[in-house]
Image 1 (cartoon, rainbow, N blue to C red):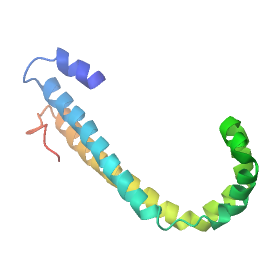
Image 2 (cartoon, helix red, strand yellow; image 1 turned 180 degrees about the vertical axis):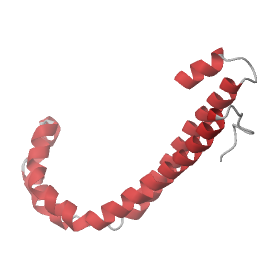
Image 3 (cartoon, helix red, strand yellow; image 1 turned 120 degrees about the vertical axis):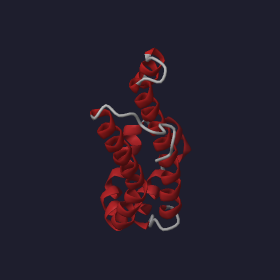
Length: 135
């Protein structure tokens, strides 16, 4: 929002207008990359996840009936699921770690690349040649 506001008040074709356009474009492309990487991470994780460690807590929740599910607070549901969480995470830790890397690394690398590029050019007082480019 601040970049949009700065760009609106900047002079046309100025260094500020150029770099705020670059920042805005970076944020939108990073958002697209995050949606794609979340989709890829979900597609990788969901077929492989092992729910057996969570089965006792799921059975416990199921025996409480639909009234509990409809009326329970988050804290009550969390308290019922909590005993199984450590084992569930331990069983799926490798899968969860790989999924986190699939989701996070593309976004992190893209943002680092764009911001280093933009900051180095701005520090030298140079414009970005094509602020609307993907890279």
